[in-house]
Amino acid sequence: MADLTTLADAKLYMGITGTTDSDLIKMLISDASSMIENELGSCVEATDLTEVKTGDYTTSLYLDNYPLITVYDMATQSTGVMTVTYTGNSPIATVSVDDDKVRLRTANNGTYETSDISFASYPVLSDISAAITAITGFTASTESEYTAFPSTDLVSYTPQDAIGSLYLDVWDVSYGGCEVKSKSYSLLVNPAEYGYGIFGSTKTWPRNDLRGWANRTNNIRIKYRAGYETVPNGIVSACNELVKLLYDHSKTDLALNKEKIGDYSYSRGTLGANIVTGKVQPMLSPSISAKLTRYYRDIVF
Image (cartoon, rainbow, N blue to C red; front, side, top):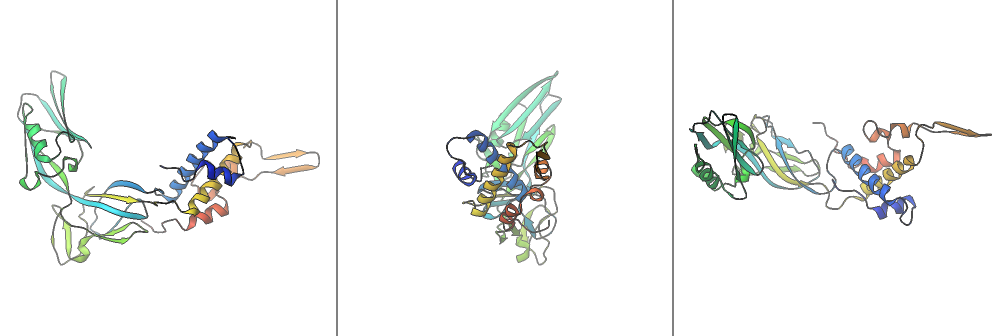
């Protein structure tokens, strides 16, 4: 998460010059930035992101972060693309897939042996299959149409039993695209709206109905960029004001509600006591809330 304002801008807003409390203000800038992002429910500064979603036969799909800048690719899972078999002598043999490697493990007499096959060294699925087959007791084969797919498109799995055979899936972007219905809301629409259905084995073929995204757990992967390439002035101003609010309260005894000196007395409100509880908006000043209002995504999931 990036800071939503600079030390110089925050100090200018607060009327502080020189190096006074610079380290404290830097910390409060990070705190305020995090609080605003949590309140808006999205990254603010433009960020490259990957999300995995679950299809539910509807045609609409909302991404977690907004506004949407671009979609790099979308993919659904194609099942059983690679077959891995262990026929060796170990009573335990497993295969797992991480973000950067395939891991093979065998066990004999309580001792595990681990072989890691990195995607950096074996960049396509045919390379992964060959590397697995080169390890004693294991064999692997990849469906011919997927041999040139990037190894990084293998779907991640926790360790699975490889004695007998197991099947690995891949993220397949070959089905085509979808419409970006709203960049402001990060709303995507499935090609089913145009007579294509993604369901069953997650392949795509022409349909006359609107069945939408396949009803399967974690079967859609989206790589995209969202947020603001330049943070809007309203969010910067809200962050500056929140930093000042946090700074002022850092200099105040929050346990002190009232004070009287002779005929002079004053009472403090509850803002300080509430500053670390609940969502940000209920305890913000009206001006901060007003500055953020236009940046909320006002939809119900």
